[in-house]
Length: 283
Ligand code: AMP
Image (cartoon, rainbow, N blue to C red; front, side, top):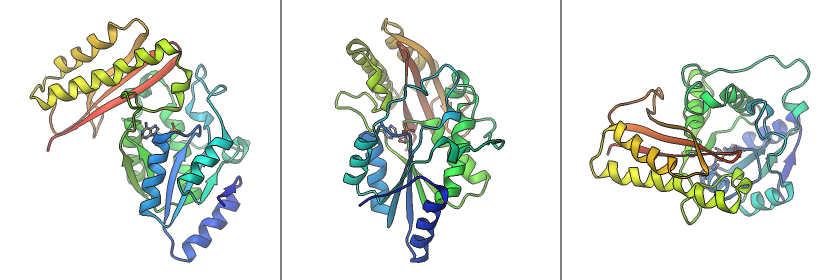
């Protein structure tokens, strides 16, 4: 039986018991509507820890006023079964009152990393992400926490926050899980119409194209940018939010692709905003 906790005290007591008997805690924070991407994080956590805790919480502070907070997909029963099959020990699903009581005043800004890429079009998004993750770390006090590389900027920000605020947790980045045809898995993919779903493939295809180009020696960011721009702008159903080629340390643009570079794309298909990326690491 998976344990389900709604209150901070309940989960804290459970974690205390586990830690008292010397167990390590692997933690996977999610917003639910789980898919194989989430499952890959849970399975990695399962392998590397004695206890696996998943949180399911649609965090309002990371959604902008015109975003999809209200209609974000939810399916608690299915999520529960997915967690059970992945060998999860406990689910934490707090209410908004539990996470942000009356007169909530405290937020975290990871300066310099939060205002470009996704942070540019989603103002305040990473302030909400950093705040909720910090709160969850304090509640769950995990040994290790697992985050997907699909949300590359999020992972970079969480790592920096963990370092800067001395959280005693190891942050583990996990590979992007894709549909068979290449589309990066996302809870938001259910919003796509049939036509948008087909058009969305252009994003992963463009990233695959530039991966091949880079591996074959093309290192000029402008040229790499133009490959992606051409592929996406030809597609009527795609509205490019950004194409960025940045250094993973500071998220600043680079003119030459060397060492550790993130090539990140965000695009709208109708009202649905999808992100994907390719990270080049010089061997
Ligand atoms: P979310 O529920 O969208 O907040 O995602 C929870 C965690 O799952 C985050 O760390 C995401 O980066 C990760 N995740 C979401 N989609 C994928 C994917 N396709 N592959 C790997 N990790 C993912």
